[in-house]
Image (cartoon, rainbow, N blue to C red; front, side):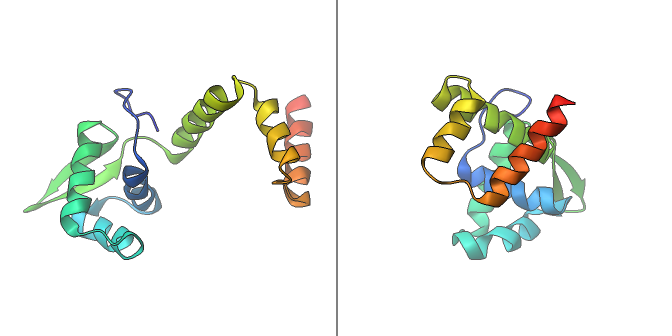
Length: 126
């Protein structure tokens, strides 16, 4: 993900962002509760990731008593769009058709995927 300053979001930071996109604002402890069990992280790790995201301007903070509440500054859809475009640019020379061709050749598309793609293409052609 690219935040407002243009810095990329790491995979670990992305896990924190997912928690915040699901529900926000959250305290550091609430973010930790959402991500620690699946990741095996400590509260200190989560706080470090939150600090990095704040420094990258991807997350905002709001003081609440002795703690801070965190909220995403970028919508999940914007993140998906940016990362998708970056993937297509980097691996397929900017060609989304190249991505679909690769997935089709690797048999990574189910019939439901193909139906959804066909439906999306129909909508785009209108």
